Image: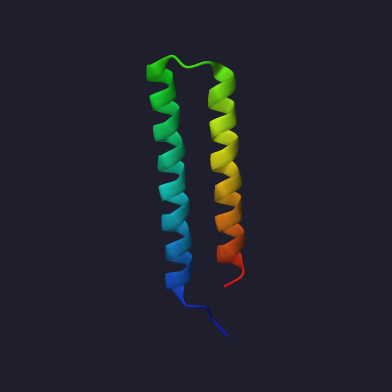
Length: 60
């Protein structure tokens, strides 16, 4: 039974949104000249949230 393409499109859109968010955080941290440790911690938190959302999308 074929799946609806809208679910795939939603997932792709969500992944693009998350990537844009990570890129934005990275640029902001570079501008601020923040310590690398803080940047890594924030990126790790964003990745954790993205993985949780990806798992939620996979269970639909």
